[in-house]
Image 1: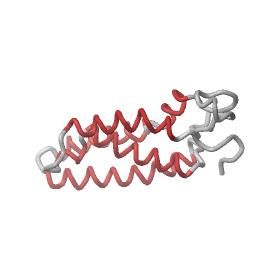
Image 2 (image 1 turned 180 degrees about the horizontal axis):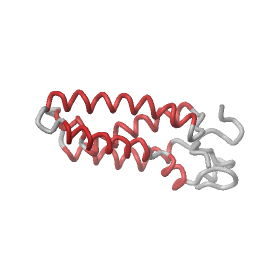
Image 3 (image 1 turned 120 degrees about the vertical axis):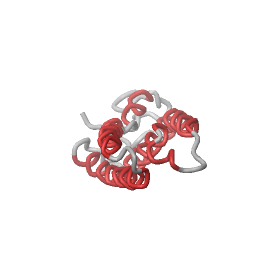
Length: 141
């Protein structure tokens, strides 16, 4: 199954009629679960190796975020068959938001408060599937 979000065939049927994805399907397809799981795994490895060195820890955490964000683009295109650039951008932004909700290297910023990531994640995850409905069937690149 492709992870590509497909627009419902009728504009008045955005809950998914015909060949298009319903809201719940769009919501699930717009969560970067595999990339977040890989980040959590690598964060655990890095934390265990650099537990006392905060400056090195920050560098490594930001490095894996950048590497995974770029790798996510290739993964989505090659493995998940996502061809719509807006969906790839949305999933990349979602990855950063999920990391912010987890804490990640954001915890080292003076302005960061744990509730911020959770609020942004909740709003983003709720509203994006309402706004982004994907390309029409047969029009994805």
